[in-house]
Amino acid sequence: MSKRPLRAPTEPSDPATWVDRHGDYLFRYALARLGQPELAEDVVQEAFLGALQSRRRFAGASSERTWLVGILKHKLADHFRRRRREEPAEYAGADSWIDDLFDRRGHWRKWPPRWTNPSAVFENTEFWTIFSQCLRRLPAQLAEAFSLREMDDLPSAKICKVLGISPTNLGVMMHRARLRLWRCLNIHWFSDKKRRR
Amino acid sequence: MSIFSCKDTVRLASESLDRTLPWTRLVALHFHRIICPPCGRFYRCLLFLRAAVRYLDADAVVVDVRHTGLSPPARDRIRRALAQSDRETES
Image 1 (cartoon, rainbow over the protein chains, first blue to last red):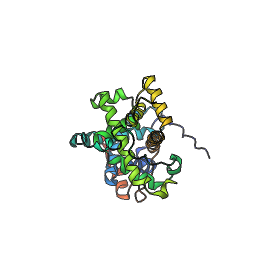
Image 2 (image 1 turned 60 degrees about the horizontal axis):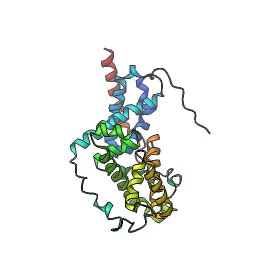
Image 3 (image 1 turned 90 degrees about the horizontal axis):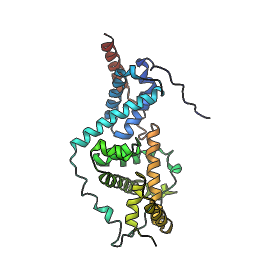
């Protein structure tokens, strides 16, 4: 059965109905990024209150849910920015294991494990539990750069501006973030032979 | 023979996902991937990661079966906060 997007209304519906219509969806969205249910609930509340304030600016160009998810994303970005400021920049020298993947001539010491096709695991809740845990284990700075690039699809130049870093620096951060995720999934998901079918 | 080692290729493969590489590097990257199975495999892992992040972002995927929606107390609390804030805005 094909799902058609709901026709976008020109103004948001009665805020009293938002919690029932969108609350669970926004909560799951926030939980995947934050990991803590109580924190996810707080951010969802902030997003709803923010939406109430900016209700007049809802242009109706997108669906109400897309509009609310956009506001939630801003609240999540604020949260991660605060977290980055509180966290010392400890990750800088902590990735020497990446060099150890290769021998002196720059060849793989050990072949990287074979991964399944995405379609084989994307319907599996257990996979997403592991994947979101791996995402949350990224140091705040790496996580912020990674999510701006991969989730918000911002061009690299814009991310450098937002974070105040050089293109080279961003390249290093993205590389480290990807390799950390890769390692985390290798250990916690793909090392189990049953899951690699 | 490729001018890049596997270590260089891995870094370059990640870079290629974020910016357009000069064509000489791109060709060297593709060439290395073809002749080097482990690097080909690693590149597919990078594409898997990108697909996973986009999938996660496109929908509210359940990551914890014990928490698939707002808890009843949170639902009530948010409803009350919305109603109160709405009243304050009106007045």
